[in-house]
Length: 158
Image 1 (cartoon, rainbow, N blue to C red):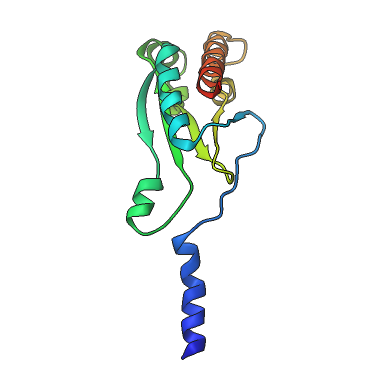
Image 2: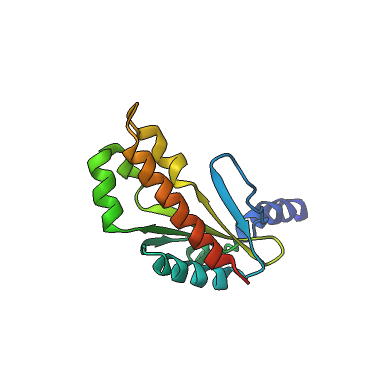
C-alpha cells in the first residue's frame, strides 16, 4: 500500500508545479529579458503598445486558469497588438497574411522571478506572403518591425 501511495504522489507532482524554462533566442524572434517581474512587464507592455500607435486587441494566458485547477505554472501572457490602418493595408496586399493579425507579444516569467518580452518579428511572419517582385507587404512588415522594436524598448526599460 505504501508503494502505491508513493507512486501516486510522484505522478501528482507534475500536475501541481511546473519547472520554469526561460525563452531563448531563435531565428526570426526577438527575446528581451528584463529585471521586471511578470505583472509589471505585462502592464508596461500594454502601455508601450498604446504609446506606439497600436491597440491591444487580444490577451490570453493560462496561468490564472491553471491556478484555478490547482496547477502552478510560471506567469505567461500573450498580448495581440495591431491597428486598423495596418489591417486594411495588409488585407489589400495579402489576405493570407492576415492570419497573423494581431501580431503577438509574449510575456513570460523567468526562473529567477524576472520576466521576458518576446515576439516573432513581423517581417518573419509576413514575408512568406509577399509576391515575387512585390515590396509593399515587405515595407509594411518593416514598419511593424520598427514599431515592435520600439514597444520592446519602452516596455523593457528600467
